[in-house]
Image 1: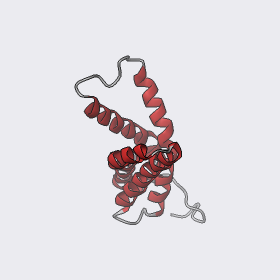
Image 2: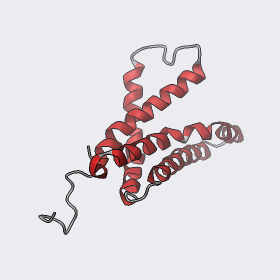
Image 3: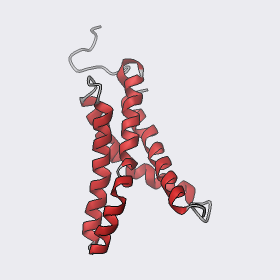
Image 4: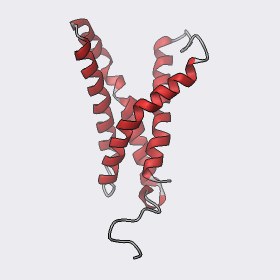
Length: 144
């Protein structure tokens, strides 16, 4: 499986699972959703919002493919993107009470994209040929 397939298929699913786990912990003992029809919608929204950050972390992972610590860098990049987006939205919404709420939740919003990025980077690293099986490098066509 190539790097992009892992990041674009497995990553959003992991992101959604992390979101559902957090919602389950916060809403306990009440159900996460009152109506079952919200489950597919939550998956689609999480899938779409996770694609761009995971694309960026896949590019970082490709660039650092020869490094052992690339999963950590991918985690930090995904974490920074999620926490930064939340900060940007909080600032745009205004109000000191929202900034206080940001200070309470930023640390568990970051892993929404950080954990999937790190896990996907690890999966790519454990795949044969570093996740780029079948990929032809420019200038190396026809050479073994």
